[in-house]
Image (cartoon, rainbow, N blue to C red; front, top):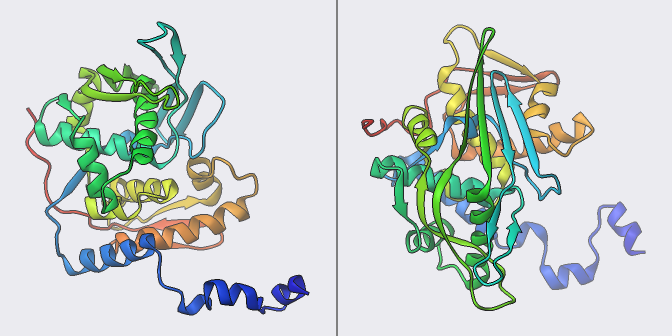
Length: 319
């Protein structure tokens, strides 16, 4: 009977008593953050906080979910990314521990944090032991608990341990950089045997990565990054539009077919219709945080139009 009620569009009385009618349920914290951030962005309020991110990560994507593979590859047009999972020496056991490939929204947020600190300090070297906790508090809107910090430690370790290969193709020539994003870092292991987490407290970005970052950093609106923090696909779409829309020729809108869009963002979707559905739903969320984005979607693909960047402030001068 309950199944028939659901199929007929009715809601079981037990669900209503427990949760209330959907239209009268209070919004979640994530929904409220999206609404408040969208209102602030449209009103031009509180726009002093700028985040920065390397253009390669605005054009390619890390895995959305944990994968068993030790190598991850992604290509978008002339830009290619290859990530190789790393390892770290445990100080207690003196054994090398294999780290997974970075995945999900957290490595994306950590990378944005690293890139932002490097650009603002105009230095590849900085400490994050305290600033990461402050970053999480600012990002979430509340102080992180032990489980949340430990989770970020795991993702930070996977990120700092990985080897990254960036490549761009121009005509018949390929330019490639092979580097660890982080070349010097300190790992801290908790003594509690049940907390197998890694925590980089001292960070030094590689010179190769930092030099390319200085010349290819994309300004992002920190409020949007914070509002989209729980959705890796939304973060990727937002970053992609932030670096792409401002480069579309005025009189030549860019058309991208759905198969090409799926190749970039639809890592786990076999059916293009299923991918298109979730992409369009996520795109609406992204547009609430990037109201100046001008693009249309139809059954064939996306049409991008020249749009102002999400934040108009200029980058700090390069060293």
